[in-house]
Length: 335
Image (tube, rainbow, N blue to C red; front, side, top):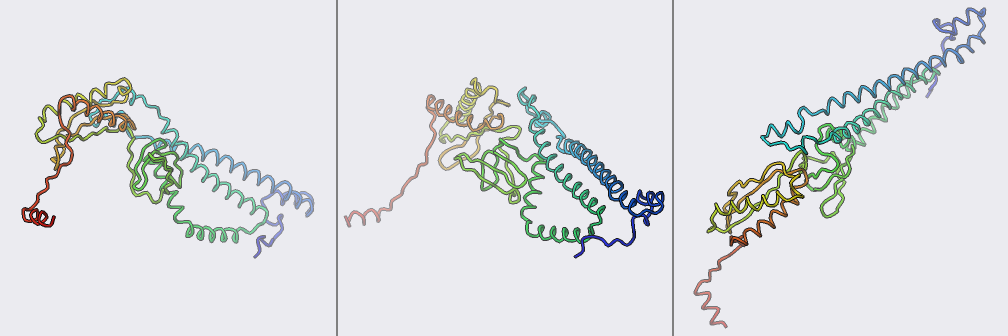
Protein backbone atom coordinates (compact mmCIF):
# COMPACT_ATOMS: atom_id res chain seq x y z
CA UNK A 1 0.00 0.00 0.00
CA UNK A 2 1.44 3.34 -1.01
CA UNK A 3 1.23 6.00 1.66
CA UNK A 4 3.10 8.69 -0.35
CA UNK A 5 1.52 10.29 -3.39
CA UNK A 6 3.31 10.05 -6.67
CA UNK A 7 4.44 13.50 -7.75
CA UNK A 8 2.98 14.09 -11.17
CA UNK A 9 4.44 17.55 -11.56
CA UNK A 10 7.18 19.61 -10.04
CA UNK A 11 6.33 22.27 -7.47
CA UNK A 12 7.11 25.15 -9.84
CA UNK A 13 4.72 23.75 -12.42
CA UNK A 14 1.73 23.97 -10.07
CA UNK A 15 2.01 27.74 -9.81
CA UNK A 16 0.77 30.13 -7.16
CA UNK A 17 3.43 29.30 -4.59
CA UNK A 18 6.84 30.36 -3.41
CA UNK A 19 8.54 27.57 -5.37
CA UNK A 20 7.17 28.95 -8.64
CA UNK A 21 8.24 32.49 -7.76
CA UNK A 22 11.83 31.41 -6.92
CA UNK A 23 11.99 29.20 -10.02
CA UNK A 24 11.04 32.12 -12.25
CA UNK A 25 13.33 34.65 -10.52
CA UNK A 26 16.40 32.40 -10.55
CA UNK A 27 16.32 31.57 -14.21
CA UNK A 28 14.57 28.22 -13.75
CA UNK A 29 16.97 27.01 -11.08
CA UNK A 30 15.40 23.76 -9.84
CA UNK A 31 17.66 23.44 -6.81
CA UNK A 32 16.74 26.89 -5.50
CA UNK A 33 13.07 26.24 -6.20
CA UNK A 34 13.09 22.94 -4.33
CA UNK A 35 15.00 24.54 -1.45
CA UNK A 36 12.39 27.30 -1.20
CA UNK A 37 9.60 24.74 -1.31
CA UNK A 38 10.98 22.41 1.39
CA UNK A 39 12.60 24.88 3.77
CA UNK A 40 10.53 28.07 3.37
CA UNK A 41 7.16 27.52 1.73
CA UNK A 42 6.21 24.24 3.42
CA UNK A 43 7.36 25.31 6.95
CA UNK A 44 5.38 28.54 6.60
CA UNK A 45 2.23 26.60 5.67
CA UNK A 46 2.78 24.22 8.59
CA UNK A 47 3.22 27.14 10.98
CA UNK A 48 0.01 28.67 9.62
CA UNK A 49 -1.84 25.37 10.09
CA UNK A 50 -0.58 25.04 13.67
CA UNK A 51 -1.52 28.64 14.42
CA UNK A 52 -5.06 28.12 13.12
CA UNK A 53 -5.35 24.90 15.16
CA UNK A 54 -4.15 26.68 18.30
CA UNK A 55 -6.63 29.53 17.82
CA UNK A 56 -9.43 27.07 17.08
CA UNK A 57 -8.61 25.16 20.28
CA UNK A 58 -8.75 28.30 22.43
CA UNK A 59 -12.00 29.49 20.85
CA UNK A 60 -13.57 26.04 21.15
CA UNK A 61 -12.70 25.81 24.84
CA UNK A 62 -14.25 29.21 25.52
CA UNK A 63 -17.36 28.39 23.45
CA UNK A 64 -17.89 25.02 25.16
CA UNK A 65 -17.48 26.56 28.61
CA UNK A 66 -20.16 29.17 27.86
CA UNK A 67 -22.45 26.61 26.24
CA UNK A 68 -22.26 24.22 29.19
CA UNK A 69 -22.83 27.02 31.68
CA UNK A 70 -26.00 27.96 29.81
CA UNK A 71 -27.25 24.38 29.50
CA UNK A 72 -26.88 23.43 33.17
CA UNK A 73 -28.15 26.76 34.49
CA UNK A 74 -31.36 25.94 36.39
CA UNK A 75 -34.56 27.46 35.12
CA UNK A 76 -35.47 28.20 38.71
CA UNK A 77 -33.42 28.43 41.86
CA UNK A 78 -33.92 26.10 44.85
CA UNK A 79 -35.65 28.98 46.64
CA UNK A 80 -38.16 29.39 43.81
CA UNK A 81 -38.81 25.63 43.68
CA UNK A 82 -39.63 25.54 47.38
CA UNK A 83 -41.85 28.61 47.15
CA UNK A 84 -43.85 26.99 44.32
CA UNK A 85 -44.50 24.06 46.66
CA UNK A 86 -45.79 26.43 49.33
CA UNK A 87 -42.82 25.86 51.62
CA UNK A 88 -41.33 28.66 53.67
CA UNK A 89 -37.72 29.05 52.59
CA UNK A 90 -35.26 29.24 55.49
CA UNK A 91 -32.10 31.28 55.19
CA UNK A 92 -29.83 28.23 55.14
CA UNK A 93 -31.51 26.97 51.95
CA UNK A 94 -31.76 30.35 50.23
CA UNK A 95 -28.08 31.01 50.81
CA UNK A 96 -26.75 27.70 49.55
CA UNK A 97 -23.62 28.15 47.41
CA UNK A 98 -23.46 27.13 43.76
CA UNK A 99 -20.41 24.90 44.24
CA UNK A 100 -22.29 21.88 42.91
CA UNK A 101 -23.25 23.70 39.74
CA UNK A 102 -19.66 24.84 39.24
CA UNK A 103 -18.39 21.29 39.77
CA UNK A 104 -20.81 19.87 37.18
CA UNK A 105 -19.91 22.58 34.68
CA UNK A 106 -16.22 21.85 35.16
CA UNK A 107 -16.66 18.10 34.68
CA UNK A 108 -18.78 18.42 31.54
CA UNK A 109 -16.61 21.18 30.07
CA UNK A 110 -13.48 19.09 30.61
CA UNK A 111 -15.02 16.12 28.84
CA UNK A 112 -16.34 18.04 25.83
CA UNK A 113 -13.19 20.15 25.57
CA UNK A 114 -10.95 17.08 25.57
CA UNK A 115 -13.03 15.50 22.81
CA UNK A 116 -12.97 18.68 20.72
CA UNK A 117 -9.21 19.13 21.18
CA UNK A 118 -8.52 15.55 20.07
CA UNK A 119 -10.63 16.07 16.93
CA UNK A 120 -9.00 19.42 16.08
CA UNK A 121 -5.44 18.18 16.47
CA UNK A 122 -6.14 14.90 14.67
CA UNK A 123 -7.33 16.89 11.66
CA UNK A 124 -4.30 19.17 12.01
CA UNK A 125 -1.88 16.22 11.96
CA UNK A 126 -3.59 14.80 8.87
CA UNK A 127 -3.30 18.13 7.04
CA UNK A 128 0.38 18.42 7.95
CA UNK A 129 1.01 14.89 6.70
CA UNK A 130 -0.66 15.92 3.47
CA UNK A 131 1.80 18.78 3.17
CA UNK A 132 4.62 16.22 3.13
CA UNK A 133 3.00 14.27 0.35
CA UNK A 134 1.52 11.46 2.46
CA UNK A 135 -1.50 9.84 0.83
CA UNK A 136 -4.29 10.29 3.40
CA UNK A 137 -6.89 8.07 1.74
CA UNK A 138 -5.55 4.75 3.13
CA UNK A 139 -5.09 6.30 6.57
CA UNK A 140 -8.63 7.66 6.67
CA UNK A 141 -10.05 4.38 5.36
CA UNK A 142 -8.11 2.42 7.97
CA UNK A 143 -9.26 4.75 10.73
CA UNK A 144 -12.87 4.33 9.57
CA UNK A 145 -12.64 0.54 9.67
CA UNK A 146 -11.01 0.66 13.11
CA UNK A 147 -13.76 2.99 14.32
CA UNK A 148 -16.51 0.67 13.13
CA UNK A 149 -14.82 -2.33 14.77
CA UNK A 150 -14.35 -0.42 17.99
CA UNK A 151 -17.98 0.70 17.90
CA UNK A 152 -19.26 -2.87 17.65
CA UNK A 153 -16.89 -4.15 20.32
CA UNK A 154 -17.48 -1.37 22.84
CA UNK A 155 -21.23 -0.78 22.59
CA UNK A 156 -21.75 -1.15 26.33
CA UNK A 157 -18.88 1.25 27.05
CA UNK A 158 -20.37 3.84 24.70
CA UNK A 159 -23.79 3.35 26.32
CA UNK A 160 -22.30 3.85 29.79
CA UNK A 161 -20.51 7.05 28.74
CA UNK A 162 -23.57 8.56 27.04
CA UNK A 163 -25.74 7.75 30.08
CA UNK A 164 -23.14 9.29 32.38
CA UNK A 165 -23.04 12.46 30.30
CA UNK A 166 -26.81 12.93 30.53
CA UNK A 167 -26.74 12.20 34.28
CA UNK A 168 -24.28 15.05 34.69
CA UNK A 169 -26.22 17.38 32.40
CA UNK A 170 -29.52 16.73 34.17
CA UNK A 171 -27.98 16.85 37.66
CA UNK A 172 -29.68 13.63 38.68
CA UNK A 173 -27.23 13.24 41.58
CA UNK A 174 -23.81 14.36 42.72
CA UNK A 175 -21.07 13.43 45.16
CA UNK A 176 -22.46 13.28 48.69
CA UNK A 177 -26.06 12.53 47.65
CA UNK A 178 -27.82 9.47 49.03
CA UNK A 179 -29.41 7.65 46.10
CA UNK A 180 -31.30 4.44 45.34
CA UNK A 181 -30.31 2.72 42.09
CA UNK A 182 -32.40 -0.39 42.66
CA UNK A 183 -29.94 -3.10 43.67
CA UNK A 184 -27.56 -0.57 45.25
CA UNK A 185 -28.38 2.19 47.73
CA UNK A 186 -25.89 4.45 49.43
CA UNK A 187 -23.90 7.69 49.42
CA UNK A 188 -22.32 8.74 46.13
CA UNK A 189 -18.54 8.81 46.46
CA UNK A 190 -17.58 9.28 42.82
CA UNK A 191 -19.31 9.95 39.50
CA UNK A 192 -17.57 9.38 36.18
CA UNK A 193 -18.81 8.99 32.65
CA UNK A 194 -18.71 5.21 32.90
CA UNK A 195 -19.58 4.33 36.50
CA UNK A 196 -21.10 5.63 39.70
CA UNK A 197 -19.51 4.57 42.99
CA UNK A 198 -21.78 4.22 46.05
CA UNK A 199 -21.02 3.31 49.64
CA UNK A 200 -23.83 1.54 51.44
CA UNK A 201 -24.78 1.95 55.08
CA UNK A 202 -22.93 -1.28 55.90
CA UNK A 203 -19.76 0.03 54.23
CA UNK A 204 -20.15 -1.92 50.97
CA UNK A 205 -18.76 -0.05 47.96
CA UNK A 206 -20.92 -0.46 44.84
CA UNK A 207 -19.56 0.22 41.34
CA UNK A 208 -22.59 0.67 39.08
CA UNK A 209 -22.15 1.13 35.29
CA UNK A 210 -24.21 4.14 34.22
CA UNK A 211 -25.65 2.26 31.25
CA UNK A 212 -27.52 -0.23 33.43
CA UNK A 213 -29.23 2.36 35.63
CA UNK A 214 -32.95 2.26 34.82
CA UNK A 215 -34.12 4.70 37.48
CA UNK A 216 -32.59 6.90 40.16
CA UNK A 217 -34.11 7.79 43.52
CA UNK A 218 -32.32 10.76 45.09
CA UNK A 219 -33.01 10.83 48.82
CA UNK A 220 -31.08 14.02 49.56
CA UNK A 221 -31.71 16.63 46.90
CA UNK A 222 -33.03 20.08 47.82
CA UNK A 223 -34.97 18.84 50.87
CA UNK A 224 -35.99 15.60 52.59
CA UNK A 225 -38.88 14.38 54.73
CA UNK A 226 -38.59 12.83 58.16
CA UNK A 227 -41.53 10.40 58.23
CA UNK A 228 -42.60 8.32 61.22
CA UNK A 229 -45.54 5.90 61.38
CA UNK A 230 -46.75 4.95 64.87
CA UNK A 231 -49.28 2.25 65.74
CA UNK A 232 -51.73 2.71 68.61
CA UNK A 233 -54.35 0.35 69.99
CA UNK A 234 -57.93 0.48 68.69
CA UNK A 235 -59.28 1.73 72.01
CA UNK A 236 -56.88 4.73 72.04
CA UNK A 237 -58.23 8.28 72.05
CA UNK A 238 -57.02 9.42 68.62
CA UNK A 239 -57.27 13.13 69.41
CA UNK A 240 -55.04 12.62 72.44
CA UNK A 241 -52.64 10.47 70.41
CA UNK A 242 -52.30 13.13 67.71
CA UNK A 243 -51.65 15.78 70.36
CA UNK A 244 -48.89 13.70 71.94
CA UNK A 245 -47.34 12.89 68.56
CA UNK A 246 -47.18 16.57 67.66
CA UNK A 247 -45.66 17.41 71.05
CA UNK A 248 -42.99 14.70 70.71
CA UNK A 249 -42.08 15.77 67.18
CA UNK A 250 -41.81 19.42 68.21
CA UNK A 251 -39.64 18.49 71.18
CA UNK A 252 -37.14 16.87 68.83
CA UNK A 253 -37.23 19.63 66.21
CA UNK A 254 -36.69 22.35 68.83
CA UNK A 255 -33.46 20.83 70.08
CA UNK A 256 -30.41 23.01 69.48
CA UNK A 257 -28.70 20.48 67.23
CA UNK A 258 -31.77 20.22 64.95
CA UNK A 259 -33.20 23.74 64.78
CA UNK A 260 -31.07 24.70 61.79
CA UNK A 261 -32.06 21.49 59.96
CA UNK A 262 -35.82 22.02 60.04
CA UNK A 263 -37.43 23.52 56.94
CA UNK A 264 -41.08 23.06 57.93
CA UNK A 265 -42.65 22.39 61.33
CA UNK A 266 -43.90 18.85 62.07
CA UNK A 267 -47.41 17.90 60.97
CA UNK A 268 -49.53 14.98 62.08
CA UNK A 269 -51.27 13.81 58.91
CA UNK A 270 -53.72 11.58 60.77
CA UNK A 271 -54.70 7.95 60.41
CA UNK A 272 -52.65 6.24 57.71
CA UNK A 273 -53.97 2.69 58.02
CA UNK A 274 -56.32 0.44 60.00
CA UNK A 275 -54.07 -2.55 60.48
CA UNK A 276 -54.79 -5.92 62.02
CA UNK A 277 -53.07 -5.06 65.29
CA UNK A 278 -53.63 -1.33 65.61
CA UNK A 279 -54.22 2.07 64.05
CA UNK A 280 -51.30 3.68 62.19
CA UNK A 281 -50.83 7.44 62.57
CA UNK A 282 -48.29 9.34 60.46
CA UNK A 283 -46.24 12.43 61.35
CA UNK A 284 -43.89 14.22 58.92
CA UNK A 285 -41.56 17.21 58.83
CA UNK A 286 -39.46 18.65 56.02
CA UNK A 287 -35.76 18.82 56.84
CA UNK A 288 -32.43 19.51 55.20
CA UNK A 289 -31.15 16.79 52.83
CA UNK A 290 -29.66 13.87 54.71
CA UNK A 291 -30.94 14.91 58.16
CA UNK A 292 -34.12 12.82 58.03
CA UNK A 293 -32.67 9.57 59.36
CA UNK A 294 -31.23 11.02 62.55
CA UNK A 295 -34.39 13.03 63.23
CA UNK A 296 -36.61 10.01 62.59
CA UNK A 297 -34.67 7.92 65.11
CA UNK A 298 -34.90 10.60 67.77
CA UNK A 299 -38.59 11.17 67.08
CA UNK A 300 -39.36 7.48 67.58
CA UNK A 301 -37.53 7.50 70.90
CA UNK A 302 -39.30 10.65 72.05
CA UNK A 303 -42.71 9.29 70.96
CA UNK A 304 -42.08 6.13 72.97
CA UNK A 305 -41.25 8.19 76.07
CA UNK A 306 -44.28 10.47 75.69
CA UNK A 307 -46.67 7.57 75.09
CA UNK A 308 -45.32 5.66 78.09
CA UNK A 309 -45.76 8.71 80.33
CA UNK A 310 -49.39 9.11 79.19
CA UNK A 311 -50.26 5.41 79.30
CA UNK A 312 -50.87 5.02 75.56
CA UNK A 313 -50.09 1.52 74.39
CA UNK A 314 -48.12 0.79 71.24
CA UNK A 315 -49.68 -2.57 70.29
CA UNK A 316 -47.81 -5.68 69.34
CA UNK A 317 -49.08 -8.52 67.14
CA UNK A 318 -51.64 -10.71 68.96
CA UNK A 319 -53.24 -13.94 67.78
CA UNK A 320 -56.21 -15.94 69.11
CA UNK A 321 -55.89 -19.74 68.87
CA UNK A 322 -59.14 -21.76 68.61
CA UNK A 323 -59.10 -25.45 69.61
CA UNK A 324 -61.95 -27.80 68.62
CA UNK A 325 -63.45 -29.84 71.44
CA UNK A 326 -63.13 -33.24 69.69
CA UNK A 327 -59.43 -32.59 68.98
CA UNK A 328 -58.86 -31.67 72.63
CA UNK A 329 -60.64 -34.84 73.83
CA UNK A 330 -58.67 -37.02 71.46
CA UNK A 331 -55.43 -35.50 72.67
CA UNK A 332 -56.45 -36.15 76.34
CA UNK A 333 -57.38 -39.84 75.72
CA UNK A 334 -54.13 -40.53 73.91
CA UNK A 335 -52.21 -39.04 76.79
